[in-house]
Picture 1 (cartoon, helix red, strand yellow):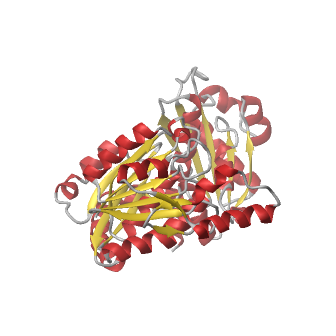
Picture 2 (cartoon, one colour):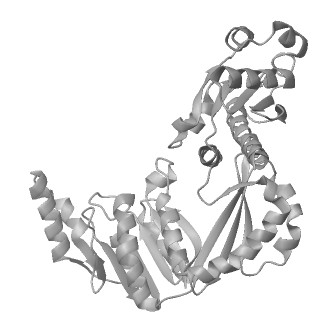
Picture 3 (cartoon, one colour):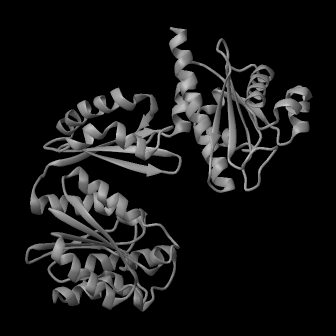
Length: 418
């Protein structure tokens, strides 16, 4: 079965809200083996919605709509679909009672336009809304299925999962599941990654492999189709192992892992602590780690030393070192990392210094960044980045690279530990 998801609402086209509904619906359909080939967004315009329906009918078996079921004049999804399917709209008594009960409960008078929310397509299966007022609708017409869902995610998500999915399974029966695993990589570009795993990409059938570029990182999505989730995972495993054998050094996590969550996990697993000295990132590195639950058991603190004087005063960096090498240098980054580790008595010390841009800084071109990693019992290391994005993008990417190099240092220290 092929499905198309059609989000209705001019606010989506204006960029006022994000279309998270399509992502949720796609993920749930994949779990039951229904393919999604198209996501469509259309404004609150009956003519354009009618055209969208006609196009979707040519390429999909299941048309799923979200939004446009409310009480206002621009909520025209039901009316437009009713005309397209030549169906009558009738009032659903249970839905009307739910709406009336709501207004009674909140002590407000129900306006006439709220009765519109109780309208459903005649002969349709009504999907109860347990978190709002407008019910969902499911109806089969000729060889197509039409699912109408409310727009607010807190109403749509439980309705789709608990009402619409069982309806579709009742119509079509159980299908193969589609399961994916996402490998997350840092420190390698999309082009280089594709070259390295070209032999795997050329022979892919089931599972399929898709590189996905994100700011500062690359993802590899491995997707398999099978009768059960367990069988799909068995198909994914050998492909994942082959990929890891080629580019495993760049893989820091899977699925929902982030660089900061993986760093936190590794630090806590080993009862290790960390401190940071930040110049160009002015606390962004520590803030990123601080978003992770439990990091308080590992992150002891740090300093923001934005200018030369503070590097000398707060960290005790020798003025002669800064005068000779500059503050955008490997020597400065290493000295900062070593000093902050000593002053906070932590296992690891991390430093970031550089020229964020847009202008050169301390004789170095914009985008030049040095990251220092000092660790107890290990040689202090420094890493140079030459970034070319905007000022704030360079700062954010510096944080991501610092977490990447820190993960590598943690893994190296872990090996030494054993």
